[in-house]
Length: 285
Image (cartoon, rainbow, N blue to C red; front, side, top):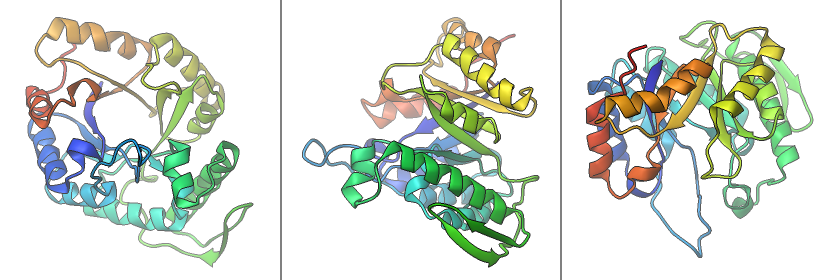
C-alpha cells in the first residue's frame, strides 16, 4: 500500500505558499504522494466565497521543491479544459518533476457552479462524451507520433507533440468515478487507475462497493496487474491499531493507494500539519 495526502485547492488551502509548504512536509514525513483538487468554484456565490489556488501552478511549485513524492491533480475536470492544453501542461510537469506526475481526470462537479456559472455545458451526458474524447486526444498527442482527431466535440489537424512523456509508456492516468454508476468504472478500466467516490457526498463508499467496482474493471482488463486502486479516508496517525483496522479491509479488497482525506481536519491548518508530520498509517500485514 502506498500513502498520500489529498487536499482541496480552496479555503484554508487557497494559498499557494501554504500548499508548497505542505508538499515539502509530506515528502519529509514519509508519504508517497501529494494530490490537489482542481476546482474553479465549489459553492454558490450567494452561500460562500473562499480563496482558491490554481492547482497546476501549485503542483509546479511543489515539483520544484520536492524530489521523491508522486503528485498530480485529483481530479482535473477534462470537460472544462482544452485537451491539447492539458496534454502540453502535463508533459511539461512530467519532465519538470522527473517523471513523478499522475494525471487524475473526471467529469467534474458540481456541474452548476463548476460549469454553469461560466456558461460551460453542464449536461452530464455531454460532459462524459467530452471526457472520453479528451482522453483519446491526450493519449494520442502523448504518443509523440503524428496524430489527428475528428470527434463530435473536438477536431484536430494532423500534428506531433514533443517531447514524449518522461514516463513510459505514458504519464499514468487515474479516472474518477461515482458509485452507484458503472460507466465511469468501465472507462477507468482502459487507463492506469481508478479513484471511486460516492455520488451522494459526504456518504462514503464501502469495501463491498469497491469489490463490485473491481469486478467491472477486471471484466474489461482481465486482471489488475500494474493498476492503481485509490481509496480516501481518515486515520489518526496516533493509534496504529485503529488505523490498521481502518485501512486493512481496503487493502484486502484490492486497494493499493490510501489517500488521507482532511474532511474531519478542516478546523485549521495546525491539525492537518500535525497529521502530515505523524506520517502514514502502519499496517503490519
